[in-house]
Length: 408
Image 1: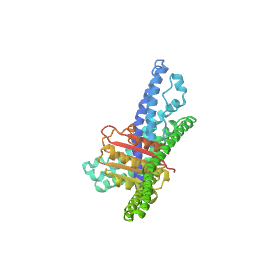
Image 2: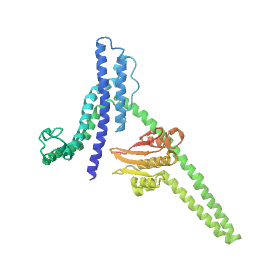
Image 3: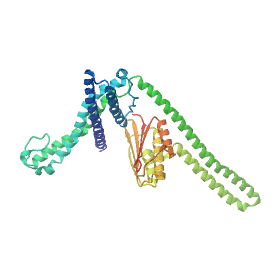
Image 4: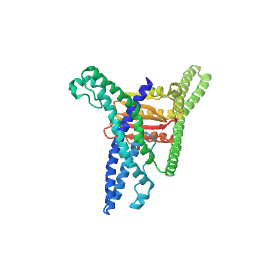
């Protein structure tokens, strides 16, 4: 059952990818026609002024495809603007790779997108044909590739069996078509060799600095918690024990009350100490796993929260702790700032990435600069080489999507 559910989910994801790729393929087809027209005009000597604009149009379409592919896998960084001057631009390796990608995606992306969209439509059409075949004349036959005459229910059921074949094709070919559609972009829109390494070094330098900042912030938080809470409680316990010791000599009847106060202070200190420890690495992750820990967070939220967790294999403890922190902080923001009536938390593992999505139906307009904890979430996510995307238009809804690397 789990295998079938996984295949269905993979096919639905593949269909979403294919439809998105079909959209960028249409843009690529338009850019390709424009580029060919400008090239023909250049051969006639009248299109040189239009060539830089055509290259910028190709870059815009390529950036749309980079953004699409980055949402479904490894990040493809967007290059800078197209170099000034036609000769300089045509010598640029990124521009050359984009010009090579354009016809490939215009043809292959368009074809695979249409095929990926047609397969489920044919499957639905033929699977449901026994329900509505009487609306057609027998000599019309069935729509699609079926060629035989439909004289009754047995023939209609035979068409339904063809629909089962289409459904099997959707489940089996959908992910393959999505990968084939994305292949040219993954190959040609990635930075050229050497450039990718320098970008990666810059990215790792930035994330290392973010990790150090996040570590320093976490240490300050722990220090404040220990100093303002636990330390003061322990000082109170020490004072009360001294008072109880003196009361034993002077007024033994008061000693019992003082010792009770000292015990209460000690229990409060232990409670605050446990809270600090949970903030470092929640023990509930070890006891109940990520799904159980998140279920506790969702159940304790004052805003009704729907939780979906699909993580079949445990991730590293640091990754699970980060995911737990992200959900905890996000739900706190939902309760305090969003005015939402419901929230949705979806956590799933997709190959080597742990994906966390928190959505609420509040008033939106969330801003990281307003001190709502979003900056802390981003720093903690980037410290583990992850990515965070926040979408919060005025009026809502607010959607926070986090990707964390968790190994293969």
